[in-house]
Length: 603
Image (cartoon, rainbow, N blue to C red; front, side, top):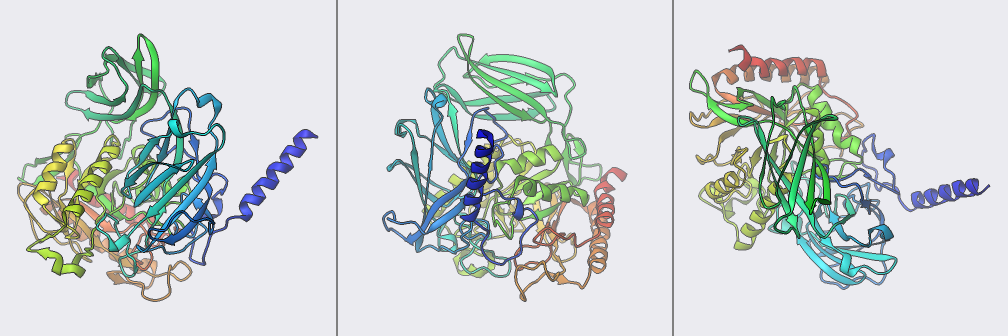
């Protein structure tokens, strides 16, 4: 009888929570929208590169209010919002635009397990766009600027005896401000999309020891048959030891120790190399020891892969993967969702686009002016997908729309804008550094906010010498970095060439096909060229692939097709925006893509 009462009570709680939330608006939605659980949305562990056993998600229904900028905390909230979906999204249950003259307040309550009370408790935010101020139990504990990188606070000193109250205030000026914001604008149209305000990645708690591993940095070196591992340690003393155990599946490959203050070089006999064709990952356990006692332990992983450039027998500078010429062929992937905007409805949805891109025969994704949750990069690592990571563009520059803000070729930023850019770019590189799928950093897209290109490129290369730097994809062609990147729509064209750097086609295609029932809006839908049915679009794609195949022989080492999915008013995706329809023939496109990729193997 007691079990039956508990079961019905659980059903009552679930139905009550569900009644407090439903997707807002009438826009199209993905198949995963119906799988969102308002009690526990996006429940997966959010930091797969560094896993601890104990953690707690704070995702779910929070109180929210939208107030005038600078107003005190509201006495009464407007209603419920489903965290971590941004305020403007359907899945938040709110779907209201905020703007630079308003702020969003969030509040939730939670408890901390008594088993955690002897440890430090970290409060993690996956990402909040853009300025976040955080209170715990009405005590302000910190702030963070930046819309794309994770941040955390040690909340242990501020915990109450039982229930905890977490309050967050967010301000996001979108296109009125100097901050990185990608394709977000206050007036979305054309290639510019709906703003994203507030919490848009998982909020979570983690108990950690006072002496702990804060972060890990792994750098593979296939030439030395080794991986270098260094830790950002908190509270470590001289004499503490780092122990690293590497596994191939369940088989222990190597175990090594070093002083906690040292970078550890782990040697591997006959290492298995990672590639899109064979995405092998080594698992790794890292322990911090003091007097032979384990004080902290995390699970991680790494891959043995190398990205480099080298001239071929014809004097053409080629990209190489694992010391072999390798043509990188990918899609421009914006990472937007009709129901969640920046936030995928579920982890399966997040993974879907990567799987589908590989089904189409591509081996690379250019993550376009957006940064994804860390689980997305883990999926790329597992599935076998190379990643070019863009820095989100920002400031008040929408490319050609603000020519008056350009001096010569480069954008003129204020000292505040420069500082924001540099800080966020470093944060992004640092937290993504150990994900092996990332092989290229892209500081600028076209000329959008492009400034001090040589200096930014040199800094990026110095900060991470293990990857290539594509200074400005399709932007002002300043001779710096590893790559000359051309954009040409709709057909591929090799109209510039650099004998000393890799030459790539950073964007092309954009073949449009609007499909009724799968459109974000009626009318004003566009592609660079538009056709009437799937066969016409597929035929046009194959035509471009034949042109590209010849240009690979002539000098291209990579190409990126626009784009993975439709996005709002853009209808030039391989898939519709709601991911319900493949607009091109997968088999035909895959065959065409393999023909392009394999040209270098046929030389």
